[in-house]
Amino acid sequence: MLEVVTILFPDFETLDVFGPVEIFGRLRESFQPEFYSRDGGLVISTQNVKVSTRPVSEMDDSKSDFILFIPGGHGTRQLVNDQAYVDMLKALAGKAEYVFTVCTGSTLFAKTGLLDGKRATSNKRAFEWTKTERPEVNWVNKARWVKDGKTYTSSGVSAGMDMALGFVSDLVGYDTAKRISNEIEYDWHENPDWDPFADLYQQ
Image (tube, rainbow, N blue to C red; front, side, top):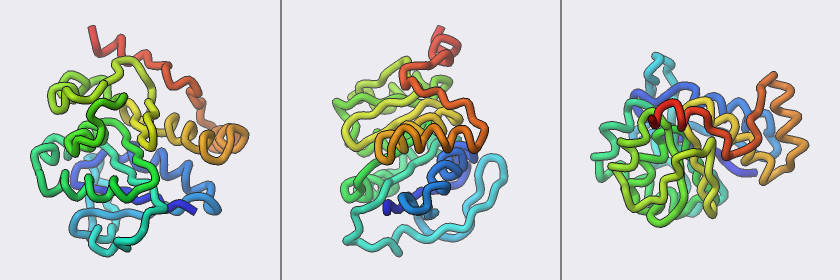
């Protein structure tokens, strides 16, 4: 059982979080989604969805069997300049079994330096900003999602669902991932290199 440690912040993107959580939550024997934030309490998304969270300080320091899940959203624009927040993510990532970022969550995570020299992707609408924030990362211009070691990074918003299904396929099995996509009536883009939005936004 892997706990999905989802780190929320003000102005996170709702679908970045709840698309993957819908998928992970259907495999209760394998994943346990939990919501955390720096200080705990209610955290409000850009779309005004309010989520109750626990403070990161309540996590068990010895725990390592978890996925660190960092979504994106408008809130990342400020947090990339918050060194204390970046340090918190770096400490959590050092303990996590996997790191899972959606959209500009990869931009924020990149500020830890843990993606330096690795392959990663991000939201294509914000890709130029992302590359400027951390040029040491090998940013992949055209990818729905990218896996490099224990880190999974996806393109924007709905891409997190494709990556979550790919992650389930890697850990639990393809048949399980395909079954879930059918159950939620989602057209899973199984090819991580499929990315029409790269051409749309990078002209």
